[in-house]
Length: 124
Image (tube, rainbow, N blue to C red; front, side):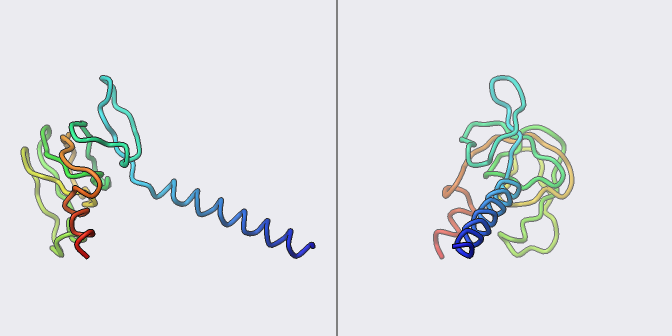
């Protein structure tokens, strides 16, 4: 009986730890909604949202860059390119790329399975 209780308690704690880890690792996005900037899970983005991309951010969706000077993005997970790629106004930033330098606003154009990354994973 004691062994069953201890086992249940350990399983419960492990489940809570995994859930907390998932929350901390989930991609967040800064989005302009209702005239103010909000942070929300990337899964809640819809095409047409305006997102703010900054140093260290993981690009939450495929976006078109609409305001700012430039970004350097690490697209190595998508393209295999070892060097950061420079992006300017009207360029496309791909979901799951990492911003290495710069800061820009971007228009969300594709989310989820419709992103470049999403299409790549569904073909496998």
